[in-house]
Amino acid sequence: MQEQQISVQYDEYMTQKYECLIQGGDLIIGDMLEGDLEVTNLRFIEKFNIKTFICYINNNMSIKFKSKTINELTLKQPELLIENINQLQNNAQQQYFCNIDDFELENLEVLNLVSNNLENDQLQSLTKFKKLQTLNVSFNNVDLTHIHSIQSLTKLSIQGCFRLKNIDQIISLVNLEDLDLGSNMGINICPLRKIKNLTKLSLQCGYLMNIDQIIPLTNLQVLNISQNYLQKIDSICLLINLKELNISSNKQIDITLLKDLVGLKILNMSNCNLKQLSALKSLKNLQDLDLSFNSDINITELQYLKQNLTYLNMICCDLVSICALRPLTNLKNLIIAKNQVVYLDYNLDDFKYLIEFRVNDNLGSDFSSIIKHRNFNKRNFIITNQAVPSKDQLFKANQMRNIECPNIQLIEIQNKHKPLKTTFNHLKQNINAAMRNVRSNQIMFTVNVVRLFQLLNTFGFE
Image (cartoon, rainbow, N blue to C red):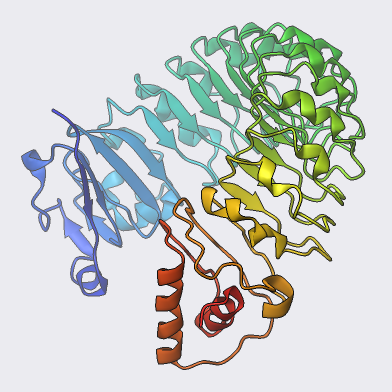
């Protein structure tokens, strides 16, 4: 039977009335439950029958059923949970969920325990979950003492666990495919080379100076080594199956040998103090490229990526022109915010497939050029957080008047200047005028009510 999504939302009155549920008796579910159920805004539950009920307690607990069987569980601040549900533990003196055995969750597949101030002893009972595949114990006071026994795990996140110093036991997790060890300093990552099935690995913010220890992991497809102290990554060329690589915030890194990773589709090199991009010439399969926060970068080499590149982020790159980007005619997302681009007029016609164009905070730019082109009505355009200086400065000839824009998905503009006061009726009239003149799927003006009139007036709607 196809799963159904069932959602029960409580208003304020219902929350007060049903802030304490007994065995789910106030909700008729039981055998009628055939899909997923989410109940929000509950505060307390007593005599909790976890087999037939799910809850979301004060943003502290979330459980999802799947065909009457819980397979996904998220706990936040479980000590609050225990205070309100005595049945979850036999010993009232214990905190958190030491007696997690009281949960009958034989089919649990996903467990999220992030940021709960847990200790190792409180994870001992996790070994009972024989079908557990995904576990997140990040930002707790734990290591691998008990986790290494859960051999069914395919995905493990253990970020920011200060107790984690030795990961030798991780070799027991023979089925592990996705591992996040981010924000753990001083770890010897050598044991990772023995986890042959790893396809996704995150080692961000780990004070790493080289990654030679993980090179035998030739099955890796996704690697995050951002926010480290890497310089030479010569051996990375051996990771021939990489599809996604994040090396951002490694300010002394040498990217020369990236040229051999011809299978890369996503590459993040933000904040790497880059100057030359010649290593990217051979990355013909690259689709998503983040070069943000690299000032004084030579972008002429990007022309070699024109075949497949659809996303380009160049926030804070000290750009004064985007002429060098004109060969990238397949771009769908172009982000050039916080630069010094002055003119866009002669550049826009080349980007025929844009659905997102972020140009905010380009000092001195003449943004009237954004809509001067008659081709604008052929584009899906997003202009986000763009300061609107004035009607005369921005749209001098009221070019938006009567221009049909059938493909626009979203226009989102923030006016940072002093708003004009207007009456509600006047505001309503201008909104109606806007809808008549610009035919689009969705237009969202993210300005407060008193600013909306000024924005519409700027567009030339009267």
